[in-house]
Length: 277
Image (cartoon, rainbow, N blue to C red; front, side):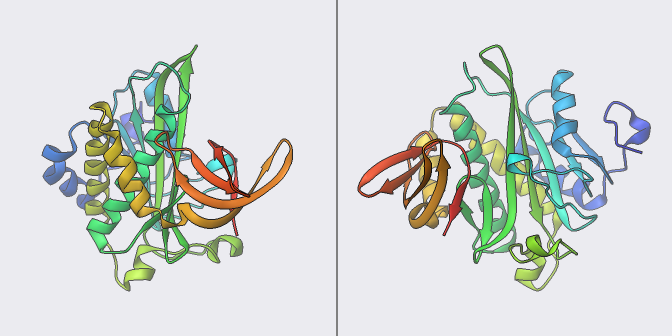
C-alpha cells in the first residue's frame, strides 16, 4: 500500500532515533521538520511533499522514507532507494520570489548543497565536497544528491520541493551505479546515527534559508565555493544547440551559474548536463 500523508492509518510510527533527534534539535531547526511525515516505503518523497504543498502545507514540512519505489534524480533519472540503505527526504520551501528564474531557484539549490555537505561533515567527519550543481561527493564517488522542483502559479513561484538522498550504507545497486557510488558506512567503516544526521541537515537548512531570507547570500556562495574545488580548473563538456562545447570550469557567479572558460572566453551555464572529464 502506498503511503498517503492524508490518511493517518497509512503512516508508520516515527522510529526512535529520528524522534529523539527531532526533540533535541527543535530549538535550532525551527520550522524545518515540523511537521514531519515518515513512511517505511513510498513512491517518491518529492511527490508526497508536492501533494502536501498543494494542500497548503507550510515551509519546512518534511517527508522521510525508509525506501522509495520511484525515487528520481535530475533529468528524470532513477534514484536507487533500497530499504534501509539511505536517508530519503523532501522538504517544502516557500521562498519570497517573484519569478522562478535564476537567481532565486539556483541559489536555493546551492544553499541546500552547502547545508547538507556541512551536515555530513559535522555528523561524521567525512570530507564531503560538492560537484555542481547538486552532487555530494567523497573521494570522487557520489554519496548523495539533491533534486529541487519548483511549482509556479503564472510567473510567481508558489513553492519548491527540495529532495535529497544520502547513502548511509552499501546496498545492491545496479552495476553502473555501484561503480560511482559510496556510502557513509563504507567510508567510515562503521554505522552512522541516522537521526542525528537528519536533525543536523534540517538545522543547517534552516540556518541557510534564514541567511538567504536576510539577504546574506554571499556567505552561502563563499562556502559553496570552498566545498566545491572541482568548480575551478576541471575539464568539462556540455551539449548546446550549436553542438558540443568543451572548456575548463572557472567557478560560479553570485547567481549560482557555472562559469566555463572556453578558449579564453567565459561562458555561463545555468542548467543542463555537464560531463566532467
